[in-house]
Figure 1 (cartoon, rainbow, N blue to C red):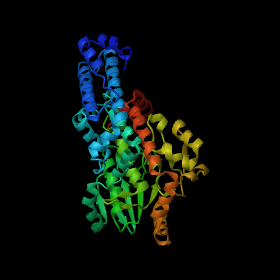
Figure 2 (tube, one colour):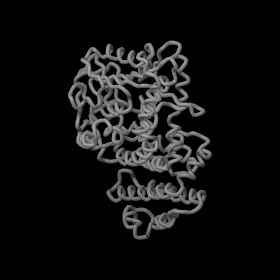
Figure 3 (cartoon, rainbow, N blue to C red):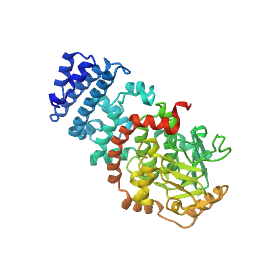
Figure 4 (cartoon, rainbow, N blue to C red):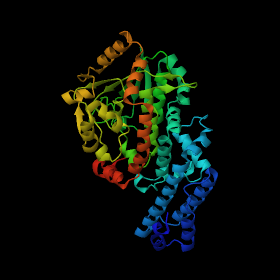
Length: 457
């Protein structure tokens, strides 16, 4: 950073001491140098930046708000420079040269401990989580930078993707219950074994089976259980019965991310990373056990009423989609202002590039039973016929002599989406989704299109 690029005038107008500004400007870490020296330089610079921001009121004058943003931008620039030069060394340090597998949440916590200020500490995240989306301080952008740089590196990135495919410890805790009783109730998610199928039922009735911070962990655990149970050959994803006057006693496949909890600041940016690197990718690629053995199975989606946003994204990773006639399938990314998971990568394979752009950029919808929706649905049945259709499909998949199903889907995936393609996509997604999540435009979109100010949990 040159002296000319340092916004000294703006920062002085905001009332910050000139002497501390001089020290801050002079402490910019060099872009090269030894790893340990770079850590010390960055940590010192970020500490000065945090101290300056701490002197400015969050809801102050226009100059004070601009100063906070300017300092945060300088700090993120320093983080970005550090990661450009030292991501590989950092990953090796916290994973003991990849001998230790860390999930993205654990990776961030370890990085925060080794390089203070590089990403938010657990205590800082607790404070940020208490703020509404509009009032957040933007510290989660640093998580996007870290994830993006790590995933962009071939070897660390592959190692991180693989770490996210390991089953959760909670899954092993519940596995015996599933094997013995045939069912596990995880709160917002239930798993039931029926014959050789495992039914994953999302049960968030007040929010039309939306996904959020409450459902994410149980959903991943449920996917793990279905993949771990040797008596289950096929996984089925289905929405539970909802509690809504417009759909009394009806099942809804899913209404996407819970926009109310998002607006209230209860859904962290980390939600997006964990969702797509973990349970969605486990459906697509299977799980990896200690020793490197993988388990993957066929998956069926039972779509009723509609599959919105994240629920629609699941249609891109399952092997068979059954939908009731008239079900709406769409990605409201334009109205929400966020990236729809890995749909930008996967949807064009199903509907073509032009239709995918229309869906993601302009809100195009598909309706099950219409000719163009055949690219997303394998079967369309009348309402009330889903149970029969599911039973028939499960029977066909398990009793028709179909062998090497996992090998066949693995071979299909090798040509469609090898791990490096997914890794590179997620490296871009990590940074761009962080920008979207923290953008004032997202708050505005939620207020305009969702009436978020009037919603209650």
